[in-house]
Length: 46
Image (cartoon, rainbow, N blue to C red; front, top):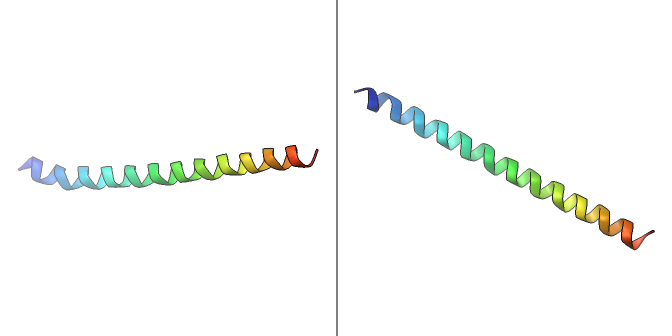
């Protein structure tokens, strides 16, 4: 009986955690791209 109550909560928690991870990875990708663009601009325009 307890398992039937805990399962939906566990599934919801996992879904929220995965959503947060996806947003973090996307943000890191933007930061890396921005840094690469800044380095390229510096190299091209000393």
